[in-house]
Image 1 (cartoon, rainbow, N blue to C red):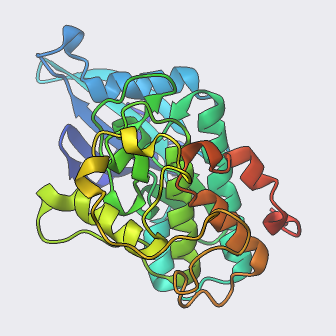
Image 2 (cartoon, rainbow, N blue to C red):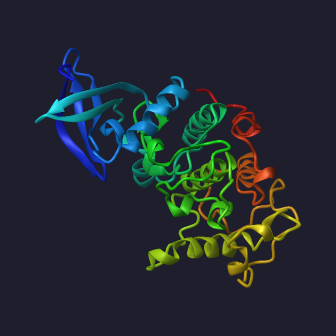
Length: 314
């Protein structure tokens, strides 16, 4: 790590610290994550670092996923310390949305396409992110270059792997996860992308259902989704009634849902209040992302090929 210097601490995390730093040779800004060793695990390597290394091995360099420059191990007061060096981007999508309201249509398209490209790259290598949200989407504001940030290491799982605990951000969680499914797959990321898409065009969180009691967060989130989209049925979502938590929620009231919610133009009329820049193709794409049935939800590749992007210049 002698080629790098730290300039300021950005945040404390449960398993280490994150610093802003620079490469000594060029002055290039970087992010440096410092992770102490963990005696509870073989070789002192913390599980978070092991998962990070798995990503290194499985996911090749992607223009839409944050670049990991270096992983290093050093001794500090005789104890092993691990470092991960990432490229530095100056803001995140959450801050950008808050500072630019409304986002121009061209900016929304450009940022959404880059997000889909990052998700597509993850899915092509059997990686499910599980916690996509505007705070972990990093942005070069001047170039409007968006990348999936380092939050992936705390939340990702592999396709076919039984669900493992991970960091979650409830307003972006897919209904199958909230209903207790443990064999969900890549569609959970597409639901999150749909929520982020809606937030970009309205400036507001789409399903802001968290109340005061964190123990009820999943129930409150489902209540908000059902309130806005209507309560799903087994006909619309085969397998719904077999999900572990469905019985808990089946008495809840909701708007009457149309027979094919995911059809073009079938979003509830009051769902996107303030979305002045969203044309018909965009609304149709969003409806395909927010389809209840995961098997019918659009894929990242199909979304990238959607007519909404036909005039996009990257």
